Image 1 (cartoon, rainbow, N blue to C red):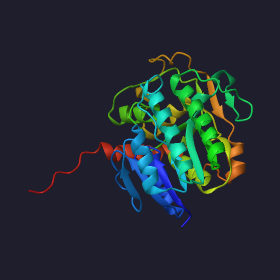
Image 2: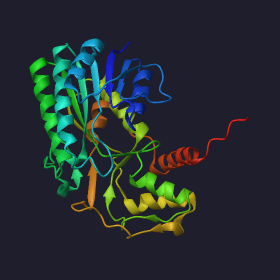
Image 3: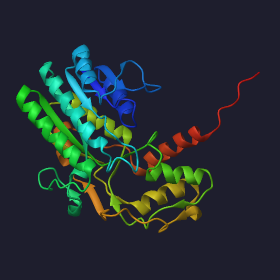
Image 4: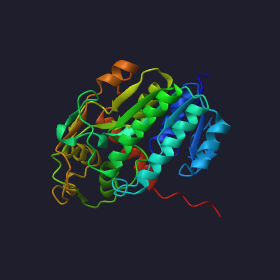
Length: 308
């Protein structure tokens, strides 16, 4: 057994993939969520409201984890950027780190965001790009990283902080670009998107889970970018979806305006993560989109009625 890991946000889009990967790695996995995820086995689920600080302390005392992978945060599309709940999640994460340290925990991996960076820089490097968040979400993530630093120094545990860029794949929440385009084209509806000239760095969810698992089981500390390292225009992402579904004629470029303050270029240098863990992304964008289309196509099919 590698250790006992507590995974928060375990039923979420990325969390369920991380739980499965950590089980494969031999961890005793304790997964925290309001409701367990379907299809994730060989772990112990704990129902807990992490915004209740007393519940957080009780959970850590009961589980006594050697490791934590902290994913839980508000992530509702269109809401999370400016929600006051960002401050609640900052408080909850700080209590979690403190309780973990006080219980003798060894290693804490927290998941932040590319929203922590100054987006005017385009290519983000951990050692060079300023942290200058433009949203309350990004500011709260920066503050969580600092709180984790303080707790690690106080209690002597190892810490790694991951700045996640743009994960995609099966079970990505509705309201995001890739699932939105897929669902529209599967239904034969027009997919209305922006001009698509923005450049982003997407990473397939299984690759992201592998990277996080590598950090949990490793010893590297500090901040790490997590992305594919292969930036692509949004127009090319949409075009790949449309080509695979034969729906090029349904794509409407320029029908939506980019969000205010949205940068033209936002991508990551991932060399520090690769060098520290040996991890490399393995799923290409076309392959990842094909897997996502297959999943959403199966999800959209009606369940056959039971025989009378």
